[in-house]
Image (cartoon, rainbow, N blue to C red; front, side):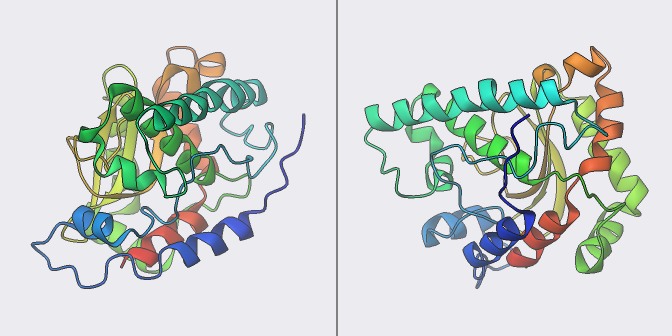
Length: 250
């Protein structure tokens, strides 16, 4: 398989540069989403462009959880189609593609269903790829671990609650760990290609970890056993990136 050479270190470096001031001046009762949208700062630890980026690892790098064929099809077919269709929608609707996709998502109610579905799909997948690594640690550390243990009683309890969000999402969708308007960690899920950045979303905030639970993300290996996929997925979570996203927002 072709190896994609973009390093984890470059993603972390770019992430830090993109979000040094993402939540300055937000009160406990204020809207974190609105503040970020008004500032034009990239959301969720990095700013997402309209073009698909190379994977930060080879297709077979995440075999502990995701087989190479699934990764190749998922990246080169499903995710690539979202990027193509997003750019088609942006051209048709006069969107400035030099600005981050996050700016569009924050006011997605003003755009077409094509923009919502493909803008969400593109953002979610670009976010998802960077949330995984072949060199995963067992858990995060520092302030993120403290916040997780404080907010969800323990790290194991967090994993159970997050896993349940993915398992219980009816049909296709995503599970999220996100920061809400009070700067608290929350767990939730969204249908289809929605995400917490969208002004139409049932949950709102800035994501720091996302899990794709569409069947195409796991069906070749796991068939209908979504819980098994979720259980193995913890083996490839890139906690360095998740911690960096969290730190840049707090």
